[in-house]
Amino acid sequence: MLFEFEDKNLNPIYEKVCAQERLSLEDGVTLWKTPDLLGVGYLANRVRERMNGDKTYFIHNRHINPTNICIHSCQFCAFGVKEDHPHAYEKSLGDIFSDAEKYNGGDVSEFHIVGGLHPDLPFEYYLDMLKGLKERFPLVHIQAFTAIELEYLAELAKLPLDETLIILKDAGLGSIPGGGAEIFAKRVRKKICGEKLIGEHWLSVHEAAHGLGLKSNATMLYGHLETIEERADHLVRLRELQDRTNGFVTFIPLAFHPENTVLNFLKTTPGQLDLRALAVSRLMLDNFPHIKAFWIMITPKIAQLAQSFGADDMDGTVVEEKIIHAAGAATDQIFHQDQIINMITEAGRQPVERDTLYENVEPRVTAV
Ligand code: V47
Image 1 (tube, rainbow, N blue to C red):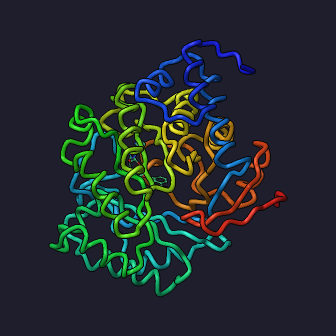
Image 2 (spheres, rainbow, N blue to C red):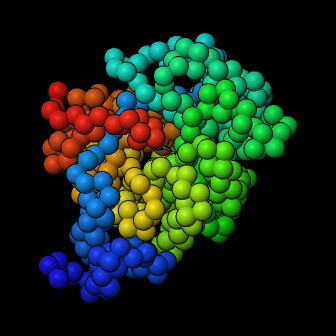
């Protein structure tokens, strides 16, 4: 064995990684618990390089958050507000189309659209949003509406979820973002988002979408009230669904930001935990093609380091982000393509521009 682990409990996991054997829930717990972070990073990097070589993917995307008005009051969320809140907003379709046009100078290939569950906007608003964007930007992939929003849209449409998804797909929905998964364990979910759909429903919305040919992403919110065992369980449940459908494209661990939330007595996650979350995800989610380090949440520097801890994706230009910034994220709103390319190159990786589903990819060899 070339690598000497500080924690000998990692030796059997190393054997499994070399043999490309699946890790167990207990292995997951060991990886979250061990003090040997570099050992975990080493293992994750082996898998990352086996699956994605030295490529780091990025995308030219634009986030759009149509409204922050929300019927729920999740304890971890600083974005959602009630209608009478001084910062409440709701964008008209005209505003959304003109936001979409503010491209930041490049060829955007994806709109990423998520928002609050507005009490009054009708189903047609969302349908016309998709149709209007597709009409104006036919080549741009629309990744929109978390599982929670989709379940709510089905209620608004007074239709079963499957039929709702088909209508949205016909109107231009290209894939589904990974938000809203939080942590599947009922114990925590009851505390942090008791009103919102249960973990099993999040999984079944994604399963239904996969069945209709819609790909999706998955997330896990960490660094709040969850235990290590609950994190390991969350990853195993995602892996089981992926075994059945193969519909997930990317996994994004989301670092909890406490500012302006009910959970503001908690601290922001340390960089070591952010790196570990990415590395353990890479090791446990052996059937997920990609692991994304979302620079907005964990800072560009940690996202850069993460490229040696299991991650192979940096997300993208983003342009305008409201959800995590409402909760205290101090990162910029936008990353220009040349900044992303430089960052990836500095990390010793090959920058590759991708589309949402990693179908059309283009290596960018030189920094601009
Ligand atoms: O659904 C909310 C989470 C999600 C906080 O699919 C918070 O490619 C941390 O899902 N601290 C929205 N997280 C963001 C999201 C996402 C981001 C980037 C890429 C993709 C993708 C998806 O953010 C929410 C919720 O799970 N969130 N509040 C907070 N205070």
